[in-house]
Image 1 (cartoon, rainbow, N blue to C red):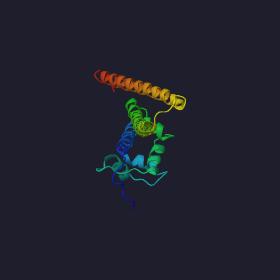
Image 2 (spheres, helix red, strand yellow):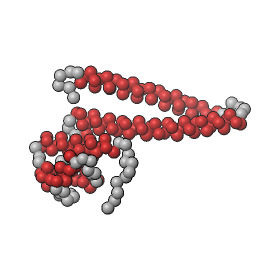
Image 3 (cartoon, one colour):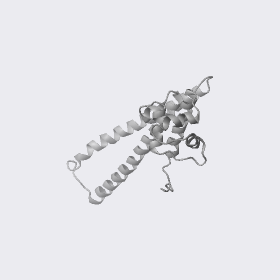
Length: 178
């Protein structure tokens, strides 16, 4: 039997939690019991009502393998995981998009760290071997422009996320809000 990873990725539980929340939403929206969901999913992979209950309620959280996830998605008549995870409820879509943004920001941060290390290495090399003529260093000009554009994009992302948070919290104070 395969062992669970000792240190699963930090975001693994967020995606699993969203998936389980979507199962519960669709089950409630369609008025299906655990047995009915299991029966529909069992067309694709063996599944019982006990499996559905454990996926939704077990502590610690029960793993969901890819075949089970696909079977559940198809049982609810969705064609893709993206469609299933965004669902029909605005809050589900917002949670899904927030996880995607978080992943993108984490990937961007990792790239930024590597880029910063490379820039530092280049700086050390230039410092140890200076002086260079302006013509020798002309190839750096596009890097300067690209860094400036990256900075401007980061500022726009920060402003948009900040505005989104303000919008969401102001709407939360209104009756009938998400």
